[in-house]
Amino acid sequence: MSYEIQLQDLRKVFPDGTEALCGVSLTCPRFKTTSLVGPSGSGKTTILKIIAGLLEATGGTVLFEGNDVTNLPPDKRNIGLVFQSYALFPNMTVIENVEFGMLVRKVPKEERRRKAHEALEMVQIAELGHRRVHQLSGGQQQRVALARAVVFKPDVLLLDEPLSALDAKIRVELRGELARLLKEFNITAVYVTHDQQEAMSLGDQVVVLDQGLVMQVGEPLEVYARPANDFVAHFIGSANLYRASVVEPVNGHVTVRLEFGEIKVPEETFRRRWSYVKPGPANLLCRPENIAIVDGQSAHAQLKVDECLFLGDRQRITGETNTGERMLVEAHSTVPVKKGDTVPICFSIDNMHFIPPEE
Ligand SMILES: Nc1ncnc2c1ncn2[C@@H]1O[C@H](COP(=O)(O)OP(=O)(O)OP(=O)(O)O)[C@@H](O)[C@H]1O
Ligand SMILES: [Mg+2]
Picture (cartoon, rainbow, N blue to C red):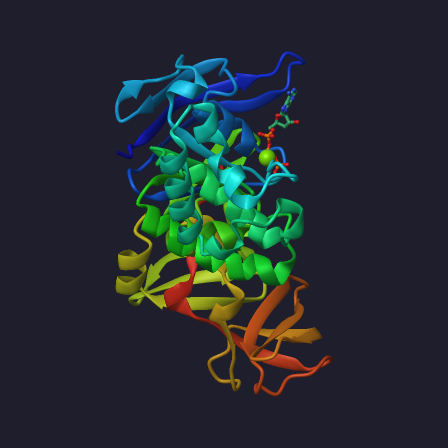
């Protein structure tokens, strides 16, 4: 049985006065993975520890499937935990590590073995059961940690940066596999990371945190394409963010004025896409892959290129507009651009997003 987790106005002030959580409310839906992402110190681990019951909140409530568990001790919560440091016993074998919790709970030997073996099969290292942990790679150790966390069939799985100790290549491989496993486990999971790509590829829902506050909750694409504020725009992905002025429609077109040029959008399109934007100041967001290098006529601005970074299939072009704003463009590698060129660029209107000015 897995359940929905609800956090209501969680607050945490540590004894030294550090305010780690300043009123966090969110719902982690049943059977789904919620990614908590944010910079170092934003409160991710604190939230996880409070859900696990390992840390007491200063205020607020934790509900599991509607039941208040705020004061329930950790061993009554049936939670599986996976942390960055695997916390495995180095001198025990893999299968002994997975069995350990059941040994403590006096589960009979045969049942212990069977369950541990099943869990190892699930994470695809059943053949390594007899090895000692110190004979495993980092990625394999993390699989053992995962097997150990799910062997109890927990109601909730909490993972705190489980991949961060691994090198880049294994990390990406294991990320894909973890995404598959989390679906297979069919469990409510909370996944903490400071890596925005990991958060988006693993989470059904992404929660962006900053300084103990929730900045945005949404599906990965929503958070990426329609960030709620400047912080989220910059933290998730690369952002070209410009101060704009939206002018009342004239002759069926809304004009978006920027320092370096203007963009005309049919009034009907503008209303449909950005009904919340009123005439006046706003911030315009355009992701690097939504800016195209064009052939002059339809250009929204001119970009003086100061760097081209070849990435294989793509290139990252950085430069400055004629009024000095920085711009990052991602284009196909075959687009002929080099350092020193001035090229006409065009924003993809369909993929633009406006962030209302902060009050
Ligand atoms: N025991 C403690 N005493 C005092 N302050 C603490 C304690 N534990 C954490 N903090 C502070 O609480 C804030 C949130 O910490 P937390 O560990 O939740 O951050 P995090 O988002 O997990 O960061 P990281 O990405 O670095 O792991 C930080 O400012 C941290 O310094
Ligand atoms: Mg942490």
